[in-house]
Amino acid sequence: MYVIDASAYAPLIVSYGKALTQSLQKVKAMILDLTVYETCNAYWKLCIKLHSISKEDAKLACVTAKNIAQKIHTCALADLDIDRAIEIALKESITFYDAAYIALAQRLNAPLVSEDQDIVATAPKYDLKVIKLYDFTQKLRQFLSSSTGT
Image 1: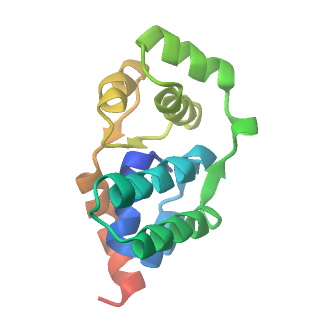
Image 2: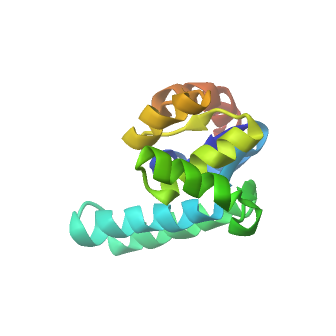
């Protein structure tokens, strides 16, 4: 199992779209319900603030992010150890968002897939392995190839 944060989830969707679904199911990926919000906010920013994607592409990416989330393991706020997440956030001076990913990965004893610098720096303090997006994509490559027919 892998916990994937928004800094990894958003670019995975842009790169692979719906083909990502089966691959994430096979590696037992898990996201927070928060991940979809963060991911869609990233697409909004790319469209409105950076003008690097169209409104249509932003909408499509958001719909895809939501659809994939409905087909993979998603941890709801109600299932998250809020006490642990806020404890980590306060101790490490990181956002609650980032601490929530760390708390989930710690509970599952799962590696965390992230490009977020605060997560990359903090997670190892909690005996968590952090996998960068490029390395995770290499792990997914066998599944991506079989699901896209390449």
